[in-house]
Image 1 (tube, rainbow, N blue to C red):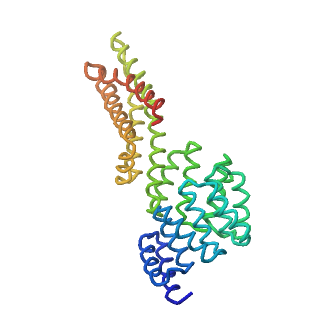
Image 2: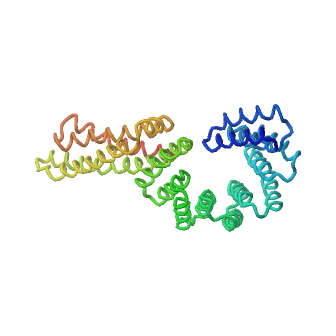
Image 3: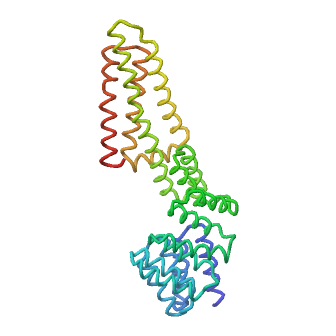
Length: 340
């Protein structure tokens, strides 16, 4: 390798580390113009194209590198991921397996094989591969994260969380570990902690923003579904208020109950607005229109609840309260038929 080639690879690696695949691609393309048969440059260029989701270009460059240097582990690893990106999972696994057999002492080869096995739905085999990667290098945070993902795929939540925590011990700013631990919390029903984890992951690594927004949307949807369903209790309290009023009996107690339920809905909305940054919330709502509908229905329930609890039954408050039940039914039907 010439000093020029080495310099280009070093510069490209710095861009890789910062997630700037476009600049890495430009640097390596320029270097390849001077040395088009260099396998290291070709492998790096393949990595850049892979980072830009150009799977066909990545596969071509990686295959070219392998042709020039048949034992290049880096090129084979990138080639396997590029094939997987094209949907050629069997070919990808074959290339990754060959790399593992040729480089049994390279932990990242086992890591890549485990990653592809998990993507192919072979979690048990992936566990064997990642255990070997961790045996070879127990200080690699990404390997602990991947094993946590594999445990989660096997529904072994406690070991998964333990591995995410180990990854964070080794690398406290590992966004993937923070995000995936939050996914665990969401699956356990701890929605508040999960949302906090997703937001933390987004702050640690803006590059995972799209994934974080998706996960925040999933967490908010779960929480708002529950809140929308609980509107039925407000409707029931309103019905009692109206019935007692028609009978000329005191309505204080059911109005207080309606007020307390309404305060709970207000607390949910306030927590969402305070906990989720406004730009992230706008992006999430933009991706999930039904989330906006659920929030608006909850706002409507708050208005109806305040009316019935503070003003008592009249034409307006009774009409608003009467619309709560159809709203709950509509939200439930939407959930059943659209899963949103």
